[in-house]
Length: 225
Image 1 (cartoon, rainbow, N blue to C red):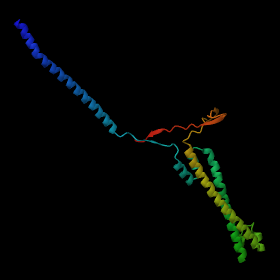
Image 2: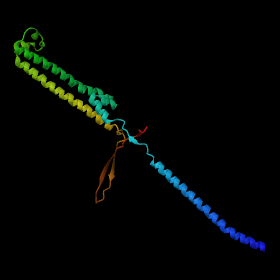
Image 3: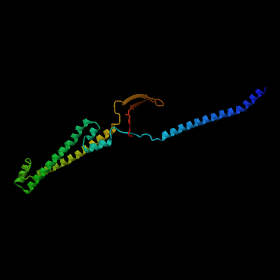
Image 4: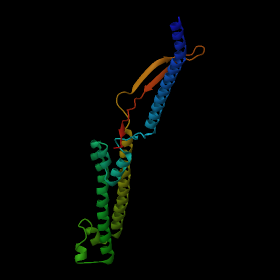
């Protein structure tokens, strides 16, 4: 009987100690879990604080380069845009008025020289240097016809210069616009549909026309390396 009482007393003394120890262990486990959670949050914050690699949209065809190339050399912008079939057209458009400019300038100078020989009454080597096609006017002293020819060639020279500048500018515009349009997908994905359309109201019938334009995707290129 005494032994049983002694065991009861021991159990009653040890039970609070065991309960306290269990509570302490559970608190420590919760603390460790909180610490782990805090560490996860801190790791996430560290990852977020690391700067990401910058990505920019880089166009395959740069309109500024196409403009610069065409301004320096007609047709170079078309080569940059890979529109090789346009190069002969550009060269012909710029080359023909360039040729006519120098042709009319040469004849203008010849007429000016023949006019000076006729007015001054020069002979000898100066007379022999006159162009054979103008020599009859010089021999007759026909100043008016020489002046008319000179003015006509001068007018054609000025027109030729204007056409050179015009076609040179059109060459630059074509290369620039073409480079801009290179980023768009202008294939056969353009669709046209006609379908009936219901419009609320009495005795109303409608038809809708739908155009579907598909734009090409732009590729992101990493330039950080």
